Length: 318
Image (cartoon, rainbow, N blue to C red; front, side, top):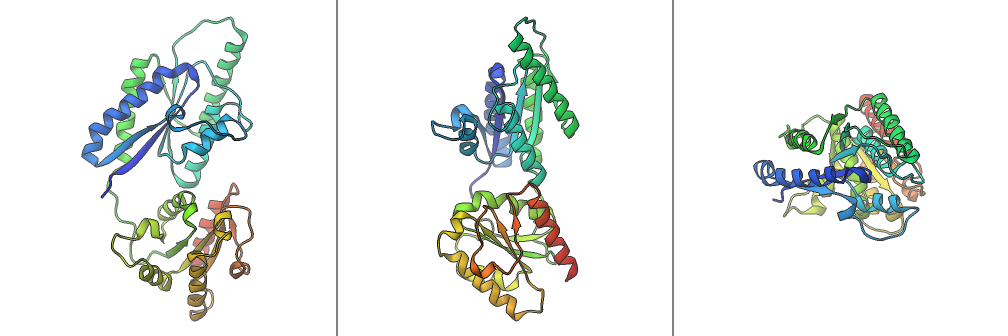
């Protein structure tokens, strides 16, 4: 069985390049030590190593699309705040805001932010303006309830980030009680293969919310008859979540067969059980078979919250 992979993304302006290298060094060290003990692979994700030339609305937009998902954000700032993007006051701030929103919705990624306090002297207006933005950003983190760390030199940062990352890896790899507990509401998740990366965080959020979701990419075991397992899961599900996207509506595939199977199951049970919820990942029209069901827009700011509330309300009503 392949080891668990944890990705640590480094977000920072250009004046803390030494610290960026330190994170890479520490992650590699932990990979060879604690990684072997916990059977986990650790990978440092940096725009310099995980992005490539392409076109987007701006350079940061390209980086965002290519970086993908990660488990921990390590943010570092000193006296520079960074270059504005079309969506935020700097690339680093945008990376934090994206991570913070994902953390609020799904509990991942974990966020670890550090500020260097080494004194410096400057009469350059632009440099002083940059530092004022750093101070404002610190205050923003305080208001959001983010506990950040301070250090006075790179050597101190290395010591701190090594200890903190070690604790974080231990936390993320701590053996947990299997979530598949009899009596929890069972949720069948159906999505297009192209949307797996967007749907997997929802699966994790549902587990954390006390549900028992089933998703083929997560729950099918090697050697199982996948068609039979899907049919069995459909027949015993309390809820059906069909994730609708540009990819899923553009082709006729197994998603539509699962919709038909779910509707057949629905017709044989008591009114109101099971429950079907279309979940839109993109602003597209759901398939004809699902038009009668009220959908949730996951791309809206409160989409995940509405989905959880709808599931809990329906489960309490059964």
